[in-house]
Length: 606
Image: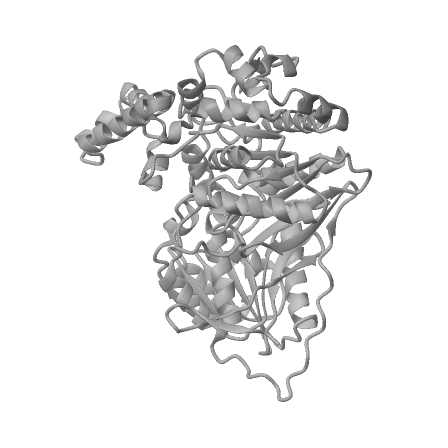
């Protein structure tokens, strides 16, 4: 029996926690329900779905709260799903069909409603399955229209540290670190819903711009089609860190999905039991778990021998656990193939984990360290205590804070760490937005003339620029003064905390894209010489040439994989009984950090 909960406003009930399921190569979440109408949510692709992930989860919960069995999933090759054996678009269509079959067979649904977002709406209309209702949210009438819009997005999103556009691979398109390959682009070019010879459903809801022509075509086939605007679309799919849920639109979608749903048959037949969720491939196997204060994570283990090393991966920004561009899931599986386990999970307020008590985001929040430690406790109970914690950007901030507090960790890999500490009372959203609008960015755009054009046209206020530059200068001043023991809270400077880490044998591997603004924070707290910093950290400072902030390209991820694998092997060696005995004998000494790592005397440029 499904436990029903009401939301804060006492309105639409919200279903109990969904269960993980596998649909062929696709990974999904299923919420059972007593009604005989199943609802399938088909998200969009890549960057847009990454932005919308949390809101999409909330929409599924409210629909399930009305008693309708509800299923949402990641397409093959995206999120936590397996890579498809064949082309991406046909695999996505197969996954939609598998989802519909699941609702009919597992949930016993007599009626099927499909809700599609953006490209997901387009693909849902092409699936060719008999469905009763279809909600198309800002669909693309053609695949070429989708490609054009993504190309424009890419020029704004995928940039190098100097804010210049990232070079694209031939015949491919990268959008927010998600890559559309040549075959996918070719398959998209052939999609044209106006060429369809039948309507995909009897009742259709279309919300968004430029849908009237398609609506008229479906009406000509005898379908009832309702159209309307999509308020809040841009805030849903174009802002990864501060995405906003379009409550008005999603309320209309929920009402359409559950309207006139058949009541449960009395006595209600029990749905078939859901098979255990086992996601595996030739070299890795994954297990989903809930733990701690409403947290969700995935343990990825080798199918072959396990080396004993485990990496704990912390969310960056609001990225769900699969990572920016799905990089965390791919890295997990590559590590498993080399005998290393890993655990990727969602902090509260991100992905599939519960909300934070105050509804805020965990970005640069010190209390989010408790979530990371809950993951450590969970893994310790599973005999998988991590030796290395890995984080990028805001995840690197939490990784640093955690290794300072928890002696179970032997090493931290900090990728493009923006800052070691955040001053209490800092407006985090402003800080993050201004990190891309500081002195270098504005100076560069001024040289290009674009900045002055926007100022003269009234698009950008000069005072806003001065405030941003001022905030950046204050941040630099704060970082420099933090090096002075008397001015740091409790005298706990970054240098002192790092020294304490080194005394217990832990190391920090600092990895930066060349030109990343986080390098300034590293220098402000630990010095300007990479060789001296390496001696303090106990590991080299790695500067990656020609790499963007998110390490988006496959070659960049290959470099990170090598760094992580080496860090795990190094941490395993330092945790050996022989090494720990040596550490104990020197417990009262103050060691020279440069003696403990043969490569710690120089920065690595790759």
